[in-house]
Image (cartoon, rainbow, N blue to C red):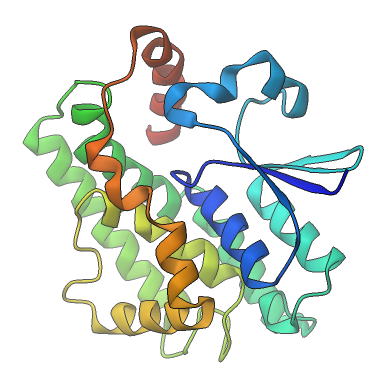
Length: 240
């Protein structure tokens, strides 16, 4: 059995893994796990990842979870172009720095924007107050400023002149609030130009394909009661 990737493209980490594998011609078998139907809670998937989260990678008898670990594994095993995860010590450290920061910063605030603006009202039937939504978007805006000032600065990409894993992870985080209808790039010409460079480096067709699901997330039907009951504790834990 070859490489298997367990993914749902509604998930930011899954999209990053999917785009990276496709862009670099890495052969894999796609195993779709529908998060909004609660398929990650199934007994079958628990045999792959007892944490019941995606993405997950299965390479023969070897199983790996956590998106950053999966991206690094793929980069090393398939010897992708150096710019993705540079051998240069300082360039590599810049990629590591962003990957370490993003979990509790940009990713969390982007998830909050998606769930509080769209997913609670549409998927769970629980609209949030305008005050909560406004506070969430204000916090996201401050994090976007940090992304520009601390990480992007005046560089073409987050770690230098070429696209890296840091850019791929970052753009996927930002596509969550875009899917919720948030204009995260509006009024931010530096960030908008960076997005265009990332999209060009990835390839417009692949970029469009990977984001088809998240850009239609507002049409997601409400969850059934069982799925809702299972999802709510995990969602609340992610966005607290």
